[in-house]
Image (cartoon, rainbow, N blue to C red; front, side, top):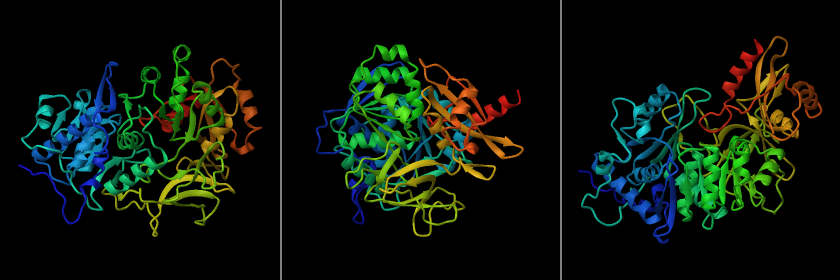
Length: 512
Protein backbone atom coordinates (compact mmCIF):
# COMPACT_ATOMS: atom_id res chain seq x y z
CA UNK A 1 0.00 0.00 0.00
CA UNK A 2 1.47 3.33 -1.05
CA UNK A 3 2.08 5.93 1.63
CA UNK A 4 1.17 9.58 1.39
CA UNK A 5 3.97 11.68 -0.11
CA UNK A 6 5.67 14.10 2.19
CA UNK A 7 7.92 17.13 2.04
CA UNK A 8 11.54 16.20 1.37
CA UNK A 9 14.74 17.88 0.32
CA UNK A 10 13.40 21.24 1.47
CA UNK A 11 10.44 21.07 -0.89
CA UNK A 12 7.19 22.71 0.11
CA UNK A 13 3.85 20.85 -0.22
CA UNK A 14 2.24 24.29 -0.55
CA UNK A 15 3.95 24.60 -3.94
CA UNK A 16 1.62 21.93 -5.34
CA UNK A 17 -0.79 23.36 -7.92
CA UNK A 18 -3.51 21.08 -6.60
CA UNK A 19 -3.48 23.05 -3.34
CA UNK A 20 -4.73 26.35 -4.74
CA UNK A 21 -7.71 26.49 -2.36
CA UNK A 22 -6.76 28.84 0.47
CA UNK A 23 -6.70 26.85 3.73
CA UNK A 24 -7.43 29.96 5.81
CA UNK A 25 -10.66 30.83 3.97
CA UNK A 26 -14.10 29.74 5.12
CA UNK A 27 -14.61 26.13 3.97
CA UNK A 28 -18.40 26.50 4.22
CA UNK A 29 -18.68 29.06 1.41
CA UNK A 30 -19.99 28.08 -2.00
CA UNK A 31 -17.29 26.97 -4.45
CA UNK A 32 -19.02 25.40 -7.47
CA UNK A 33 -22.55 25.06 -8.76
CA UNK A 34 -22.33 22.02 -11.01
CA UNK A 35 -24.94 21.94 -13.79
CA UNK A 36 -25.78 18.54 -15.20
CA UNK A 37 -26.59 17.72 -18.81
CA UNK A 38 -30.28 17.67 -17.83
CA UNK A 39 -30.08 21.12 -16.23
CA UNK A 40 -30.07 19.83 -12.66
CA UNK A 41 -27.77 21.65 -10.24
CA UNK A 42 -25.69 20.61 -7.23
CA UNK A 43 -23.89 22.99 -4.88
CA UNK A 44 -20.45 22.28 -3.43
CA UNK A 45 -18.56 24.19 -0.77
CA UNK A 46 -14.82 24.81 -0.72
CA UNK A 47 -14.53 22.38 2.18
CA UNK A 48 -16.33 19.72 0.13
CA UNK A 49 -14.11 20.27 -2.92
CA UNK A 50 -11.00 20.20 -0.72
CA UNK A 51 -11.97 16.98 1.06
CA UNK A 52 -12.96 15.25 -2.17
CA UNK A 53 -9.67 16.22 -3.83
CA UNK A 54 -7.80 14.77 -0.85
CA UNK A 55 -9.83 11.57 -1.20
CA UNK A 56 -8.92 11.29 -4.88
CA UNK A 57 -5.23 11.80 -4.07
CA UNK A 58 -5.26 9.14 -1.35
CA UNK A 59 -7.25 6.76 -3.52
CA UNK A 60 -4.91 7.02 -6.50
CA UNK A 61 -1.88 6.32 -4.32
CA UNK A 62 -3.59 3.37 -2.62
CA UNK A 63 -4.53 2.20 -6.13
CA UNK A 64 -0.81 1.74 -6.74
CA UNK A 65 0.10 4.85 -8.69
CA UNK A 66 3.29 6.66 -7.76
CA UNK A 67 4.41 10.29 -8.19
CA UNK A 68 5.25 10.98 -11.80
CA UNK A 69 2.54 8.70 -13.21
CA UNK A 70 -0.05 10.19 -15.56
CA UNK A 71 -3.83 10.00 -15.27
CA UNK A 72 -5.99 10.84 -18.29
CA UNK A 73 -9.41 12.50 -17.98
CA UNK A 74 -12.23 12.02 -20.49
CA UNK A 75 -15.45 13.89 -19.89
CA UNK A 76 -17.55 17.01 -20.07
CA UNK A 77 -17.14 19.66 -17.38
CA UNK A 78 -18.21 18.40 -13.95
CA UNK A 79 -17.34 18.72 -10.30
CA UNK A 80 -15.92 15.18 -10.46
CA UNK A 81 -13.60 16.38 -13.21
CA UNK A 82 -12.42 19.37 -11.14
CA UNK A 83 -11.77 17.41 -7.94
CA UNK A 84 -10.00 14.72 -9.98
CA UNK A 85 -7.59 17.26 -11.48
CA UNK A 86 -6.83 18.65 -8.02
CA UNK A 87 -6.43 15.21 -6.48
CA UNK A 88 -4.19 13.94 -9.26
CA UNK A 89 -1.84 16.89 -8.77
CA UNK A 90 -1.92 16.63 -4.97
CA UNK A 91 -0.77 13.01 -5.28
CA UNK A 92 2.23 14.08 -7.37
CA UNK A 93 0.75 12.65 -10.55
CA UNK A 94 0.26 14.53 -13.81
CA UNK A 95 -3.28 15.21 -15.04
CA UNK A 96 -3.86 14.66 -18.76
CA UNK A 97 -7.16 16.26 -19.84
CA UNK A 98 -8.15 14.72 -23.19
CA UNK A 99 -10.27 16.39 -25.87
CA UNK A 100 -13.01 13.79 -26.30
CA UNK A 101 -14.24 15.55 -29.46
CA UNK A 102 -11.18 14.38 -31.35
CA UNK A 103 -11.58 11.38 -33.66
CA UNK A 104 -11.12 8.13 -31.75
CA UNK A 105 -7.69 7.38 -33.28
CA UNK A 106 -6.44 10.74 -31.94
CA UNK A 107 -7.97 10.10 -28.50
CA UNK A 108 -6.12 6.79 -28.49
CA UNK A 109 -2.95 8.53 -29.62
CA UNK A 110 -3.10 11.21 -26.90
CA UNK A 111 -3.67 8.70 -24.09
CA UNK A 112 -0.92 6.41 -25.36
CA UNK A 113 1.52 9.24 -26.05
CA UNK A 114 1.02 10.67 -22.56
CA UNK A 115 1.90 7.36 -20.97
CA UNK A 116 -1.27 7.43 -18.87
CA UNK A 117 -1.67 4.39 -16.64
CA UNK A 118 -5.29 5.13 -15.72
CA UNK A 119 -8.29 6.90 -17.28
CA UNK A 120 -10.95 8.68 -15.21
CA UNK A 121 -14.08 9.38 -17.26
CA UNK A 122 -17.78 10.08 -17.22
CA UNK A 123 -20.29 7.47 -18.33
CA UNK A 124 -20.95 8.70 -21.88
CA UNK A 125 -17.21 8.89 -22.60
CA UNK A 126 -16.37 5.43 -21.18
CA UNK A 127 -16.57 3.91 -24.66
CA UNK A 128 -13.81 6.29 -25.78
CA UNK A 129 -11.35 5.07 -23.17
CA UNK A 130 -8.63 3.19 -25.09
CA UNK A 131 -8.51 -0.57 -24.69
CA UNK A 132 -5.72 -1.93 -22.55
CA UNK A 133 -5.71 0.93 -20.00
CA UNK A 134 -7.84 0.72 -16.83
CA UNK A 135 -10.74 3.16 -16.83
CA UNK A 136 -12.84 4.25 -13.84
CA UNK A 137 -16.20 5.95 -14.44
CA UNK A 138 -17.24 8.87 -12.24
CA UNK A 139 -20.04 7.79 -9.89
CA UNK A 140 -19.48 4.05 -10.42
CA UNK A 141 -18.92 1.61 -7.51
CA UNK A 142 -15.27 1.43 -8.55
CA UNK A 143 -15.01 5.22 -8.36
CA UNK A 144 -16.70 5.20 -4.94
CA UNK A 145 -14.18 2.63 -3.76
CA UNK A 146 -11.31 4.73 -5.12
CA UNK A 147 -12.39 7.78 -3.13
CA UNK A 148 -13.67 5.99 0.01
CA UNK A 149 -12.04 6.73 3.39
CA UNK A 150 -9.00 4.50 3.96
CA UNK A 151 -8.37 4.87 7.67
CA UNK A 152 -6.04 7.81 7.15
CA UNK A 153 -7.27 10.87 9.01
CA UNK A 154 -6.69 14.59 8.81
CA UNK A 155 -5.83 16.70 5.79
CA UNK A 156 -3.82 15.02 3.06
CA UNK A 157 -0.24 16.23 2.76
CA UNK A 158 0.27 17.08 -0.93
CA UNK A 159 3.30 15.91 -2.83
CA UNK A 160 6.06 18.52 -2.67
CA UNK A 161 7.05 19.02 -6.31
CA UNK A 162 10.49 19.78 -7.69
CA UNK A 163 11.15 22.28 -10.46
CA UNK A 164 10.52 19.83 -13.28
CA UNK A 165 7.67 17.80 -11.80
CA UNK A 166 4.67 17.88 -14.11
CA UNK A 167 1.30 19.08 -12.87
CA UNK A 168 -0.48 19.02 -16.22
CA UNK A 169 0.08 17.57 -19.66
CA UNK A 170 -2.22 19.47 -22.02
CA UNK A 171 -2.47 18.50 -25.67
CA UNK A 172 -2.87 21.03 -28.43
CA UNK A 173 -5.65 20.52 -30.95
CA UNK A 174 -3.42 19.07 -33.64
CA UNK A 175 -4.53 21.62 -36.23
CA UNK A 176 -1.01 21.60 -37.70
CA UNK A 177 -0.26 17.89 -37.24
CA UNK A 178 -0.70 15.29 -34.52
CA UNK A 179 -1.47 16.77 -31.09
CA UNK A 180 1.51 17.94 -29.03
CA UNK A 181 1.70 17.41 -25.28
CA UNK A 182 2.48 20.67 -23.48
CA UNK A 183 4.42 19.98 -20.27
CA UNK A 184 3.35 22.33 -17.47
CA UNK A 185 4.97 22.29 -14.04
CA UNK A 186 3.47 23.25 -10.69
CA UNK A 187 5.58 26.39 -10.24
CA UNK A 188 4.70 27.94 -13.60
CA UNK A 189 0.95 27.74 -13.10
CA UNK A 190 1.02 28.68 -9.45
CA UNK A 191 2.70 31.84 -10.73
CA UNK A 192 -0.10 32.21 -13.28
CA UNK A 193 -2.74 31.83 -10.56
CA UNK A 194 -1.06 34.33 -8.22
CA UNK A 195 -0.41 36.86 -11.00
CA UNK A 196 -4.03 36.74 -12.16
CA UNK A 197 -5.25 36.83 -8.57
CA UNK A 198 -3.31 40.06 -8.00
CA UNK A 199 -4.56 41.73 -11.18
CA UNK A 200 -8.05 40.18 -11.41
CA UNK A 201 -9.37 39.40 -7.93
CA UNK A 202 -12.60 37.47 -8.34
CA UNK A 203 -13.67 37.20 -4.71
CA UNK A 204 -16.75 39.38 -5.29
CA UNK A 205 -17.68 37.77 -8.60
CA UNK A 206 -19.76 34.78 -9.66
CA UNK A 207 -17.98 33.22 -12.61
CA UNK A 208 -19.65 31.25 -15.40
CA UNK A 209 -17.51 28.54 -17.03
CA UNK A 210 -18.71 26.73 -20.13
CA UNK A 211 -15.50 26.28 -22.15
CA UNK A 212 -14.07 22.74 -21.90
CA UNK A 213 -11.78 21.90 -19.00
CA UNK A 214 -9.52 19.98 -21.37
CA UNK A 215 -8.27 23.35 -22.66
CA UNK A 216 -6.22 26.00 -20.91
CA UNK A 217 -8.91 28.70 -20.94
CA UNK A 218 -11.38 26.96 -18.61
CA UNK A 219 -8.81 24.98 -16.64
CA UNK A 220 -6.81 28.08 -15.70
CA UNK A 221 -10.04 29.89 -14.84
CA UNK A 222 -11.35 27.22 -12.45
CA UNK A 223 -7.97 27.21 -10.68
CA UNK A 224 -8.21 31.00 -10.39
CA UNK A 225 -11.74 30.93 -8.96
CA UNK A 226 -10.69 28.31 -6.39
CA UNK A 227 -7.68 30.41 -5.38
CA UNK A 228 -9.82 33.56 -5.13
CA UNK A 229 -12.49 31.72 -3.12
CA UNK A 230 -14.98 32.86 -5.75
CA UNK A 231 -18.09 30.83 -6.62
CA UNK A 232 -18.17 29.32 -10.10
CA UNK A 233 -21.11 28.04 -12.12
CA UNK A 234 -19.88 25.11 -14.20
CA UNK A 235 -21.80 24.08 -17.33
CA UNK A 236 -21.03 20.68 -18.90
CA UNK A 237 -20.34 22.39 -22.21
CA UNK A 238 -21.37 25.49 -24.10
CA UNK A 239 -24.90 25.63 -25.41
CA UNK A 240 -26.25 29.11 -26.04
CA UNK A 241 -29.67 28.78 -24.40
CA UNK A 242 -28.26 27.01 -21.33
CA UNK A 243 -25.53 29.66 -21.05
CA UNK A 244 -28.06 32.51 -21.13
CA UNK A 245 -30.29 30.75 -18.61
CA UNK A 246 -27.32 30.16 -16.26
CA UNK A 247 -26.48 33.88 -16.28
CA UNK A 248 -30.08 34.69 -15.32
CA UNK A 249 -30.61 31.93 -12.79
CA UNK A 250 -27.34 32.42 -10.88
CA UNK A 251 -26.85 36.15 -11.50
CA UNK A 252 -23.40 35.51 -12.96
CA UNK A 253 -21.14 38.55 -13.01
CA UNK A 254 -17.98 37.40 -14.84
CA UNK A 255 -17.87 35.53 -18.15
CA UNK A 256 -15.27 34.22 -20.51
CA UNK A 257 -16.16 33.86 -24.16
CA UNK A 258 -14.86 33.66 -27.70
CA UNK A 259 -16.55 35.51 -30.60
CA UNK A 260 -18.45 32.45 -31.89
CA UNK A 261 -20.07 31.99 -28.46
CA UNK A 262 -21.37 35.56 -28.48
CA UNK A 263 -22.57 35.10 -32.05
CA UNK A 264 -24.55 32.00 -31.04
CA UNK A 265 -26.03 33.86 -28.05
CA UNK A 266 -27.18 36.69 -30.31
CA UNK A 267 -29.19 34.22 -32.38
CA UNK A 268 -31.36 33.40 -29.33
CA UNK A 269 -33.40 36.54 -29.86
CA UNK A 270 -36.63 35.44 -28.17
CA UNK A 271 -34.82 34.09 -25.12
CA UNK A 272 -32.67 37.21 -24.82
CA UNK A 273 -35.72 39.45 -25.06
CA UNK A 274 -37.19 37.95 -21.88
CA UNK A 275 -33.94 37.39 -19.95
CA UNK A 276 -32.30 39.78 -17.50
CA UNK A 277 -28.52 39.74 -18.05
CA UNK A 278 -27.81 42.93 -16.13
CA UNK A 279 -25.74 41.08 -13.52
CA UNK A 280 -22.79 40.66 -15.90
CA UNK A 281 -19.95 43.06 -15.06
CA UNK A 282 -17.08 41.64 -17.13
CA UNK A 283 -16.57 39.54 -20.25
CA UNK A 284 -13.07 38.24 -20.92
CA UNK A 285 -12.79 37.61 -24.65
CA UNK A 286 -10.06 35.35 -25.96
CA UNK A 287 -8.90 33.19 -28.91
CA UNK A 288 -9.76 35.86 -31.49
CA UNK A 289 -9.79 39.67 -31.67
CA UNK A 290 -12.93 41.54 -30.69
CA UNK A 291 -13.98 43.72 -33.61
CA UNK A 292 -15.54 47.12 -32.90
CA UNK A 293 -18.83 45.84 -34.29
CA UNK A 294 -18.82 42.79 -32.02
CA UNK A 295 -17.80 44.89 -29.04
CA UNK A 296 -20.75 47.20 -29.69
CA UNK A 297 -23.09 44.20 -29.82
CA UNK A 298 -21.69 42.84 -26.56
CA UNK A 299 -22.34 46.19 -24.90
CA UNK A 300 -25.87 46.16 -26.26
CA UNK A 301 -26.40 42.60 -25.02
CA UNK A 302 -24.62 43.13 -21.68
CA UNK A 303 -24.91 46.86 -20.98
CA UNK A 304 -23.23 46.75 -17.56
CA UNK A 305 -20.19 44.75 -18.68
CA UNK A 306 -16.67 45.82 -19.52
CA UNK A 307 -15.04 43.80 -22.30
CA UNK A 308 -11.52 42.49 -21.70
CA UNK A 309 -9.62 41.63 -24.87
CA UNK A 310 -7.25 38.89 -23.66
CA UNK A 311 -4.42 36.85 -25.11
CA UNK A 312 -2.74 33.64 -24.03
CA UNK A 313 -1.49 30.28 -25.25
CA UNK A 314 -1.28 26.80 -23.76
CA UNK A 315 2.50 26.94 -24.03
CA UNK A 316 2.96 30.49 -22.72
CA UNK A 317 0.05 30.74 -20.32
CA UNK A 318 -2.70 33.35 -20.00
CA UNK A 319 -0.55 36.05 -18.37
CA UNK A 320 1.15 38.05 -21.14
CA UNK A 321 -0.46 41.49 -21.40
CA UNK A 322 -2.21 43.87 -19.04
CA UNK A 323 -2.83 47.57 -18.38
CA UNK A 324 -0.41 50.31 -19.38
CA UNK A 325 1.92 51.32 -16.51
CA UNK A 326 1.10 55.00 -17.06
CA UNK A 327 -2.65 54.46 -17.12
CA UNK A 328 -3.09 55.05 -20.86
CA UNK A 329 -6.28 53.65 -22.37
CA UNK A 330 -5.74 50.72 -24.72
CA UNK A 331 -6.88 51.02 -28.36
CA UNK A 332 -10.16 49.14 -28.95
CA UNK A 333 -8.63 45.98 -30.44
CA UNK A 334 -5.41 45.91 -28.44
CA UNK A 335 -4.69 43.09 -26.00
CA UNK A 336 -2.76 45.52 -23.82
CA UNK A 337 0.74 46.34 -22.65
CA UNK A 338 3.26 43.64 -21.65
CA UNK A 339 2.87 42.36 -18.09
CA UNK A 340 5.77 43.60 -15.92
CA UNK A 341 7.00 40.04 -15.29
CA UNK A 342 6.84 39.09 -18.99
CA UNK A 343 9.46 40.00 -21.60
CA UNK A 344 8.18 40.16 -25.18
CA UNK A 345 9.60 41.01 -28.59
CA UNK A 346 8.40 40.99 -32.20
CA UNK A 347 10.54 39.32 -34.85
CA UNK A 348 9.93 40.00 -38.56
CA UNK A 349 10.32 37.58 -41.44
CA UNK A 350 13.99 38.52 -41.72
CA UNK A 351 14.69 37.56 -38.12
CA UNK A 352 14.98 41.16 -36.98
CA UNK A 353 13.27 42.95 -34.08
CA UNK A 354 10.43 45.05 -35.45
CA UNK A 355 7.14 46.77 -34.63
CA UNK A 356 5.27 44.01 -36.47
CA UNK A 357 6.21 40.37 -36.39
CA UNK A 358 5.92 37.06 -34.60
CA UNK A 359 5.54 37.42 -30.85
CA UNK A 360 8.24 35.80 -28.73
CA UNK A 361 7.87 35.82 -24.96
CA UNK A 362 9.68 34.81 -21.81
CA UNK A 363 7.92 34.53 -18.44
CA UNK A 364 7.64 32.38 -15.31
CA UNK A 365 4.50 30.84 -16.84
CA UNK A 366 6.18 29.09 -19.76
CA UNK A 367 5.88 25.37 -20.41
CA UNK A 368 8.83 23.06 -19.86
CA UNK A 369 8.60 21.95 -23.49
CA UNK A 370 6.73 19.43 -25.64
CA UNK A 371 6.42 15.85 -24.44
CA UNK A 372 8.45 13.37 -26.45
CA UNK A 373 8.98 15.73 -29.40
CA UNK A 374 12.72 16.57 -29.47
CA UNK A 375 12.44 17.53 -33.15
CA UNK A 376 10.31 20.55 -32.22
CA UNK A 377 12.19 23.67 -31.13
CA UNK A 378 9.63 26.04 -29.60
CA UNK A 379 12.25 28.13 -27.78
CA UNK A 380 14.97 30.44 -28.98
CA UNK A 381 18.52 29.96 -27.75
CA UNK A 382 17.97 32.71 -25.17
CA UNK A 383 14.81 31.14 -23.76
CA UNK A 384 11.96 32.90 -25.55
CA UNK A 385 8.89 30.90 -26.58
CA UNK A 386 8.03 31.44 -30.27
CA UNK A 387 4.24 31.83 -30.31
CA UNK A 388 3.64 31.84 -34.07
CA UNK A 389 1.22 34.75 -33.56
CA UNK A 390 1.84 37.97 -35.45
CA UNK A 391 1.33 41.23 -33.55
CA UNK A 392 1.70 44.94 -34.20
CA UNK A 393 3.08 47.35 -31.55
CA UNK A 394 2.03 51.01 -31.54
CA UNK A 395 3.91 54.09 -30.37
CA UNK A 396 2.60 53.70 -26.80
CA UNK A 397 3.69 50.09 -26.49
CA UNK A 398 0.24 48.53 -26.93
CA UNK A 399 0.07 45.22 -28.82
CA UNK A 400 -2.60 44.25 -31.33
CA UNK A 401 -3.07 40.77 -32.77
CA UNK A 402 -2.71 40.59 -36.56
CA UNK A 403 -3.06 36.87 -37.24
CA UNK A 404 -1.56 33.43 -36.92
CA UNK A 405 1.62 32.99 -38.90
CA UNK A 406 0.26 29.54 -39.82
CA UNK A 407 -2.95 31.13 -41.17
CA UNK A 408 -1.07 33.61 -43.34
CA UNK A 409 -1.03 32.87 -47.04
CA UNK A 410 0.59 34.50 -50.04
CA UNK A 411 -1.52 35.83 -52.88
CA UNK A 412 0.31 37.28 -55.87
CA UNK A 413 3.40 37.85 -53.75
CA UNK A 414 1.53 39.65 -50.95
CA UNK A 415 1.27 38.29 -47.42
CA UNK A 416 -2.38 38.08 -46.37
CA UNK A 417 -3.58 37.60 -42.80
CA UNK A 418 -7.21 36.41 -42.68
CA UNK A 419 -7.79 38.27 -39.41
CA UNK A 420 -7.18 41.67 -40.99
CA UNK A 421 -9.65 40.95 -43.80
CA UNK A 422 -12.21 39.59 -41.35
CA UNK A 423 -11.99 42.70 -39.18
CA UNK A 424 -12.60 44.87 -42.23
CA UNK A 425 -15.67 42.87 -43.27
CA UNK A 426 -17.03 43.00 -39.73
CA UNK A 427 -17.01 46.79 -39.86
CA UNK A 428 -19.99 46.56 -42.22
CA UNK A 429 -23.21 47.16 -40.29
CA UNK A 430 -24.84 44.01 -41.65
CA UNK A 431 -21.96 41.61 -40.88
CA UNK A 432 -22.05 39.64 -37.63
CA UNK A 433 -19.06 37.38 -38.29
CA UNK A 434 -16.62 36.77 -41.10
CA UNK A 435 -14.05 34.08 -41.75
CA UNK A 436 -11.54 34.24 -44.59
CA UNK A 437 -9.67 31.27 -46.06
CA UNK A 438 -7.41 30.76 -49.09
CA UNK A 439 -8.30 28.78 -52.20
CA UNK A 440 -6.07 27.96 -55.20
CA UNK A 441 -5.81 30.47 -58.05
CA UNK A 442 -4.10 29.91 -61.41
CA UNK A 443 -2.61 33.40 -61.51
CA UNK A 444 -2.16 34.48 -57.87
CA UNK A 445 -1.31 31.06 -56.45
CA UNK A 446 -4.01 31.50 -53.82
CA UNK A 447 -6.77 34.02 -53.32
CA UNK A 448 -9.00 34.96 -50.37
CA UNK A 449 -12.64 33.98 -50.11
CA UNK A 450 -14.99 34.70 -47.23
CA UNK A 451 -17.88 33.16 -45.34
CA UNK A 452 -20.13 35.71 -43.64
CA UNK A 453 -22.86 35.48 -41.01
CA UNK A 454 -25.25 38.41 -41.33
CA UNK A 455 -26.79 40.31 -38.44
CA UNK A 456 -30.48 39.82 -37.92
CA UNK A 457 -32.82 42.77 -38.36
CA UNK A 458 -30.58 44.65 -40.81
CA UNK A 459 -31.02 44.80 -44.57
CA UNK A 460 -28.81 42.14 -46.12
CA UNK A 461 -26.27 43.16 -48.78
CA UNK A 462 -25.73 41.10 -51.89
CA UNK A 463 -22.42 39.38 -52.47
CA UNK A 464 -21.42 41.96 -55.09
CA UNK A 465 -22.29 44.97 -52.93
CA UNK A 466 -20.36 43.57 -49.97
CA UNK A 467 -17.36 42.84 -52.18
CA UNK A 468 -17.49 46.38 -53.56
CA UNK A 469 -17.73 47.72 -50.02
CA UNK A 470 -14.73 45.65 -48.97
CA UNK A 471 -12.63 47.42 -51.62
CA UNK A 472 -13.23 50.67 -49.71
CA UNK A 473 -11.75 49.08 -46.58
CA UNK A 474 -8.94 46.93 -47.96
CA UNK A 475 -6.15 46.95 -50.48
CA UNK A 476 -7.28 45.50 -53.80
CA UNK A 477 -5.18 42.36 -53.34
CA UNK A 478 -6.82 41.72 -49.93
CA UNK A 479 -10.48 41.83 -50.88
CA UNK A 480 -12.37 38.48 -50.96
CA UNK A 481 -12.93 37.23 -54.49
CA UNK A 482 -16.05 35.35 -53.37
CA UNK A 483 -18.32 35.89 -50.37
CA UNK A 484 -20.83 33.28 -49.24
CA UNK A 485 -23.54 33.97 -46.67
CA UNK A 486 -24.09 31.22 -44.09
CA UNK A 487 -26.26 30.83 -40.99
CA UNK A 488 -23.30 29.89 -38.78
CA UNK A 489 -19.60 29.17 -39.01
CA UNK A 490 -18.36 25.66 -38.20
CA UNK A 491 -16.57 25.36 -34.87
CA UNK A 492 -13.74 23.12 -33.80
CA UNK A 493 -13.73 21.59 -30.30
CA UNK A 494 -11.99 24.69 -28.94
CA UNK A 495 -14.96 26.88 -29.98
CA UNK A 496 -12.69 28.49 -32.55
CA UNK A 497 -13.61 28.68 -36.23
CA UNK A 498 -12.80 25.43 -38.04
CA UNK A 499 -10.84 26.87 -40.96
CA UNK A 500 -10.06 23.50 -42.48
CA UNK A 501 -13.78 22.76 -42.78
CA UNK A 502 -14.30 26.15 -44.44
CA UNK A 503 -11.55 25.50 -46.99
CA UNK A 504 -13.23 22.20 -47.91
CA UNK A 505 -16.61 23.94 -48.18
CA UNK A 506 -15.14 26.72 -50.33
CA UNK A 507 -13.59 24.24 -52.73
CA UNK A 508 -16.90 22.37 -52.96
CA UNK A 509 -18.81 25.57 -53.75
CA UNK A 510 -16.30 26.71 -56.35
CA UNK A 511 -16.78 23.58 -58.46
CA UNK A 512 -20.59 23.78 -58.42
